[in-house]
Every structure is written in structure tokens, then in C-alpha cells.
Length: 122
Image (cartoon, rainbow, N blue to C red; front, side, top):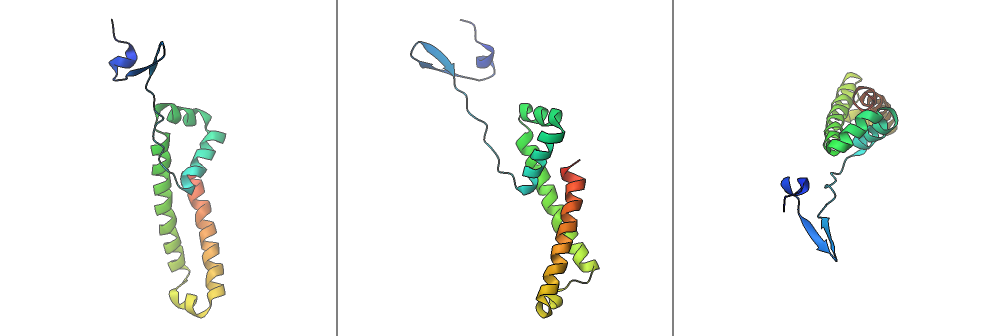
């Protein structure tokens, strides 16, 4: 009996009653962070063809994980740089906590917009 294409690529079957069924497993899902989730949503809503191509090729999770890591790195670097440029120091944090929190929230919000524009929504 000739092997099926599924068997030729290494797949195996199991028998249930009178039927041979392929042993299929769901691909392992890689956990993605908040940036990866935002990227997934953007692709689903605005870049459907790219989303489907990545999904069908099995590369979606690795793409989302890569984007998530890049966004995390970019976010932390930009927050540090902006805080240094604006003179937001640990001294200010110790002396005027409310003012420090306000400045840092402002910096984080601006940085989030930059990361979204540069990586997530592109």
C-alpha cells in the first residue's frame, strides 16, 4: 500500500473503530505580552492578509513574540532617555513623589505612543 502524503512527511495515524485518523496536535502556543497582543489586534483589524499569511505559515506566535521583545526594549530605553533629558531623577522621586509620578506617567504615555506608531501599528 502506497504511503499517503501525510505519512510521507512523517505523520502517523491511529485507529478508532473502523477509521484511521491522523494524529494531529495543536501547535504549542507561545505566550505573548501586551505589545504582542496589541500587534495581533492591529494585524487582525488592519492587515488581514498579513495576519492570515503569518497564521497559516505557523509564524504568527514567533512574530508576535519578536515584536513584543522589541517593543519592551524600545519602551524601557525611551523612558530612561526621556527621564534623563527632562531631569527626572531619584532625588526628585525622594523629595517630591507626586511631581515625580506625574512626570513619569507623562513620559510613559508619550513613549507608549511612540512604540505604537513605530512597531505595533506599522
